[in-house]
Image (cartoon, rainbow, N blue to C red; front, side, top):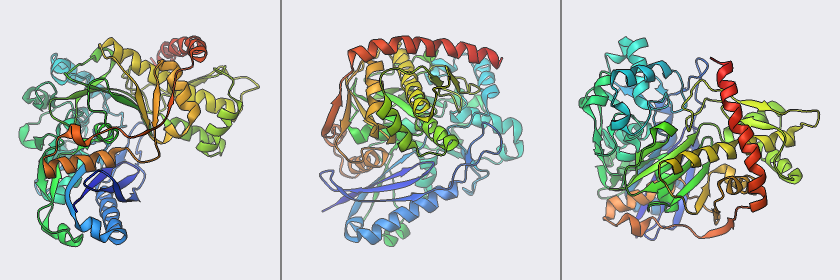
Length: 488
């Protein structure tokens, strides 16, 4: 029997998952990473060495718990948080901490890039946003020229882990699409986009499809984990595309709503379908000849965690108290722009707000407001995806926030779309990565491997609640111009 390993590199930690030939889970392990540092307001950085330490810890743990299964691994897939700028010199040494996906320092550079190359949006299919990798390099070029001059390679987080696993500089299409250096329609690096940031193809990793082989595991690591024979490492995927592979959303119109630290509305497309006016992310999927769109909000469960911190309560308890007293849309309105916002505003300087406070406002009501604010933000994403011509069918719910039935009820009502909750199990990035590893090692067709999980329940949109939320959503949308004006 052969096994396949998925490694999901997150900002909070690394998860490793073993699956068998039929996709069944054989074992899993996790290791925490150190919290990102914030040297200045709006900045977010992390030491890449921490990802590697956590990767070794997780796979070593699998070796202790499931030695025979780990020894039988024939393919490895990687998933990782997107957009992070990992800068290496000619000896592959890290030059500075990685600038992460939720770092907002490069807003000025975004405007400069678009002014310098008016065709940028047409080529990249996306607006220049501070979260993307290319503007981060423009910032380094301007503010840390001594670092910029030494750059030999720019890697995304999972590609850095791949480098240490295999010795090869390789990236998959889905993660590369989030750099703003990729011609997304052609699935190739763009010389014009690279030149805007003073870089060339030589600074970029080699490109492969996520379900194809990228390299082989180093001999010394295979020996460390008891693996024999050649172990193929797949191209893998950015975290959201990997999650789509994990829940089987690879066909047009299939998608998911993710309530993690950030929030994502993800839909697969048969063709490249950008909508830059609505700040929609239009990226390559992790499998060939497929693309996807995303609406991305930067603070989903992070918003509830923020409320938990300032009230001294657990986020799960706050969600439970909100559900216990829920009678319909609340009076308080929350704008979840704690780290700025991507879709639909593309405004790194936006900040959150709570409006409609009264003497009745208590932690439970504020928790409801936070959950509703995130639901309204997801509704914003749906609106601009539909503007791009996307039709969304049933969505699957993933992420830690999907454990709240109230939150899913709110989202279903606001989107007027059924939300399916899978049976208990992990259908996230690690499973998607493992499935990609299986495809790369065996040549199996992704459509045969990336099937949807069994559904535990489907939350149908409550028609009366949907109409009640229309008024609250209108209030929510009216507030953004007001907070934007206060910062101008």
